[in-house]
Length: 460
Ligand code: ADP
Image (cartoon, rainbow, N blue to C red; front, side, top):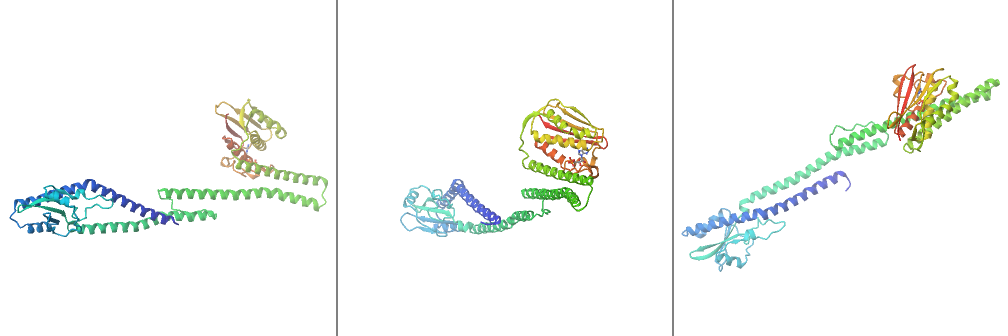
């Protein structure tokens, strides 16, 4: 079956039919077990009343009497065992009855035909006006024993009820099927709308207007879907912004390299000037190479965030090596370095953490005025984590920028870094590395007073 709509309709109708069938079988069972014996007993009582009245008033005309009983809604048969069977009221549809049953009645016993009527799965027997489906009682007519068989004339008594129930069932089925068609349309409609929405999102359009107010599962699905579309939109915007940032970062060094190399080729320039231009070209190409390295680092961190090459090493030792490696840079600015680095073994990716300390220290050196101080501390006082603080007495970061400094390409104020050509990727890389180690990073800063970065890493 092709559509959910048809599938739903067919399933519901099938369930209705199956339930109807099971309900009929169960009620038939109930009839056979409970109602049939009751019915049998009731008609036996009635048959005995009919005969006992006649026995008490044998002066009445039997034929007239039995005809008037039949008129009240009964089918009656009378026989003496030899002559032809006489019937009163509507004729029986079948008149076969075992001669032994007639004999037994003639001998004075009662024939319980209703209780003995054969049980069938789909037939209650209630409506079968067979002679065998009667109650037989003995009756003495003018001194001669006869057998009287009697059963209610269901057609006469409940004929119109049959029509009533047939109309009821037909209407119930007809209306249910119509409502199932209409109701299914209502259920399936939002799924169709969602399907259309997925196609729209696949085409790159994210602003959907779905009915997300429904409280049911479909409403939930619509809400999650809208949420997903918004995330995709954000991701798409981030990707576009990232590409434009990268292009921008590449564009400016390339432009200056092109400009200076053209000047060098075309004009007669004094050697000192030439040297200056060449040094700019070198610096710009260095900047480009650094940028591509940073982008590669970020890409590999994005791709394999979980794939850390962990070893156990002394964190204090690693930080000291980085400070030592950068000595030339902090000495150039006359910065004092204070260290409180007790031996701290940690299980982490040494190459990546090395990059963290380089990025943080580079920033501290870059943004601290001549004569300032940089303090690096390891705090082992907590049981489950190690904290590393990198503090400087530099220019600080304005409060409104604190939340965004870990974003890719975010620079606080381009004017502050005119000479340093930062890419705005350093802290994004730090953040990503610490995140991959299940750690956290915090920043506290006051403008013109200094900045403190605190990194927490889980202890082994
Ligand atoms: P960059 O690679 O350009 O330095 P980062 O991502 O490392 O970029 O830093 C983002 C911004 O945060 C920088 O542009 C700088 O303005 C600010 N910043 C980072 N560290 C410090 C610091 N120690 N003191 C003051 N400002 C800082």
